[in-house]
Image (cartoon, rainbow, N blue to C red; front, side, top):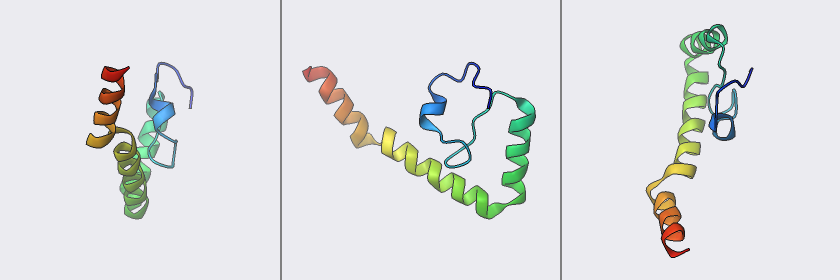
Length: 72
């Protein structure tokens, strides 16, 4: 991917593992088509993305971050 203006996204999303990252609309269109054409791939990517989101943004993780911030 070109990595223009993607900010933190590439640090959270592993391209083709737990999501897709690109700033190129043609590449994104191809990714979306692949997901529509392959339901098993869509489930695999979706499950991996959900797992990553829970790991980084769960209620407990956010509470822990706030606790460290307020104590520190």
